[in-house]
Length: 383
Image (cartoon, rainbow, N blue to C red; front, side, top):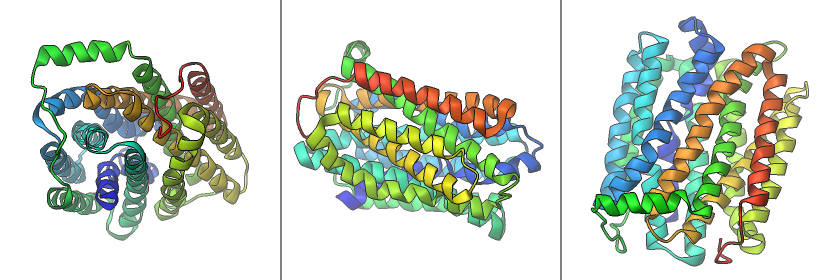
């Protein structure tokens, strides 16, 4: 079960950030600006933000497994169409189409875990799911960066689409059918639940924290590529893809976060993780490449622990309309990512990487304030 949940998490995020590894190439191929390529990253993130609560409500009405498999199948279509993009605008459109299907995997999988498992099993599976997200985020960037050097990014996306079809087949074969799901097809009831969630301190705090987290991650890992493609580093797409190996640290650290959560609780764990992430961002200002890489590793590790803690915070404390609650969290999470791609693009164009770092630190201070004053003690020590 851990393997299956982890792989579903991986396939969900295989496409979301893959484009980051070839941003310098896209700027040359399409004569695009920093803000334009930033919004190509943000297009998928924006669609995920828009669709997350709606797919959550729909899944609460019709089921879990069929939704996950169907979303993976749909995701393969725009992934293949990206290879045909005639302009940066069309590329952004197909990236947006990718994002429309991702919540059908992410939001529904979290709801599935929350319904089918309790206590320690729940927090462990959540950590494996986030580890899968981390692995998928790394593999998407790593594979496309190296595929571009071998066959070009366009043919690379055809192969990425085939991998997504493999993910759909795996989920169909290996994911057990829900046993504890109770359908709620009443739209009025769903709207009532939505209203309750919008005034639920657990949900609102998690949404705000998630927005700050993904703002930092998207802003950092999008524009560090442009920074490292310039002098004195002059890294190729393959070398930039290798930089994303720092993500693999998150695959190891995230399952270990379960121990931190049980011992210290979500609030304290998040506060420490955000401060660790801030230190990592500051470290990327050093000149030696190894120092930048260490900074990225520290920054991303803090982000992954924060994400795992926040997702568990919702799963433990929200009992009604779990899929909708997850959808609202992801709406806030990816809205933050969209803002990160856009605002960091403007900031990078005006002040290069150094000014971008200060914007990232400002947002992480906001995350620290949310964690300090918004998060309250969870109802279960397993959180």
